Length: 188
Image (cartoon, rainbow, N blue to C red; front, side):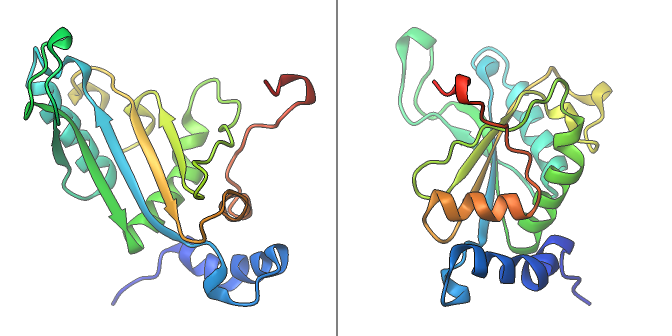
């Protein structure tokens, strides 16, 4: 029996009607929806130590519950001693129920565990997608600190349908995403 993720059920029953009012949408298909979440780790020391890429892929696999793919360099950069085709990182793309479950864990477990947290910046890409950098993968409870090789950060990119930054921000705010408060004197 397939279980509907908690936040997806909440989206369908509570958030969607509120968003429809807030955004004054005529149609449910015009509302923003979570399409996918992409997790990626770039490994700077991968040129000297190939095991770091394997460790990053293993960490992403544990965090996401889905096998990570090793990413390769697209072009050579002589000053970095990087050659085309060398492994330099890992990534995972989560869709459907896995994306909703990861989003639930991110908002309710991972973000509250970040040290000296003052809110996430409210910077979107212009198309309604949101990216967040996490400095250490150890904030995820699935990661065993003794078994990891070094600390590494990861990028979380949430892709939404709807196409506007305001609509995506409204969706994230409905789920209680902790955006940083913008102060009048700190805008630039």
